[in-house]
Image (tube, rainbow, N blue to C red):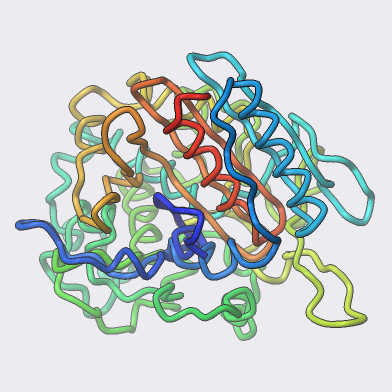
Length: 418
C-alpha cells in the first residue's frame, strides 16, 4: 500500500487515506491540471482511514528552538505510545547529521525485545519506490524509453488478458495505467486490515513468493479506465513492473532490486526476508485485538509470505535515510533519469502530485518527495526535503499513528526548527 502529503486531519492504509499496498485520502480527488491525468482517491487513503483516529488532541508545536521542537515531538511519541500503543522508530537527519533518533515499543510483543536502531521494519508500499528506481535504472541500455507499450515487453501469459495496447511503463510507474488492481484501495473501508487479509483465504500467503504468483488475482479483470485518463493507485501495476524488471535483467525481482538499489545506496540491512525465516532484528507486524478478551496477533497470515514489487521489503531507519540521500544526490539514477523520476506526472491535489515512483508534496523550501506504505501491522513514511537537505523516516510495526507524527515533523520543517 502507499504515500502522499498529509495534514493532521487526514485519517488512511499507505497513508494519505493510507496507502497500504496502496490507498489515498478523499481530498486528493481534485481536477487535473491541463494535460495531466485526473486524480482519484488512492492509497493514501488507508493510513487516513485508520491513522489519525482517537488519541486526544495534539499540543501545539512550539515556536522556539530546535531543541524545543524535538522535545515536543518526543513528548508526542510518548503520548502515542501510551494512548495508542505506538511502536516504532523516528529518524530525522539534516545534511547527514542526526537531529532526532528515537524508538518506542517492542519489535516482538511475545519476547518483549525492544525496538532499537538495528530493528528492521516491514515497509509495505515504500517498496514501490525501490521498484521504480530499479526500472528507471534500465534506461537506456535495457529499456529504450518509458513510453514503450507493455505488450512489447511482456509475453501474453505475463500480462492482463484485456490489457490496453497503449499501456506503457510510464503509466505503470505513475498509477495512470487503468489496469484493474487485485486490491482496490479506493473501495476499502475502515476494516481494510480484514479485507486485505481476506484476499488470502483461498490463495494462501505462502504461495505468493514471485511476482507472477499475483497474476491470477487481476489478469482476468477488465481495466477500469483507458491509460492516461487519471491517477488511480494500483498495486497490480507494480507487480507488472516487477515482471518487466525480471524480463529485461534476466534475474529475479529481489536480486535485481538488491543489485540496483540496496547495494549502491549502502542499505546494508535491507532485504526481503520470508515470513518463515528466523533472522535477528526483524520487527513483527502486530495486529490489534479484534474485541474484548482477544489477544494481539502477528500479521503472518495477513500479508504475502515474502515481499515483492508492490510491497514487503524490510529495512532499518538508517537504511532508508541512506536511500533518500543516495536518491537525492544522484547516486542511484543518472541526472536525466532522476529529473524524470521527480517530474510531476499526475496531479493528486493542489499540493501533491505523483512522480515516477515517488510522491511530490508542496513547494519552496518545504517541498518534499518520498513514499508511504501501510499493510496490516505495518506503517512507513519516508520523505526528503531537498532544499534544507532533511530526511525524515517514520516506521511502525502497528497501525494507527504514523500520520500524526508525520504531520508534526512537516510542521517543524515548515517552521524552520529542524
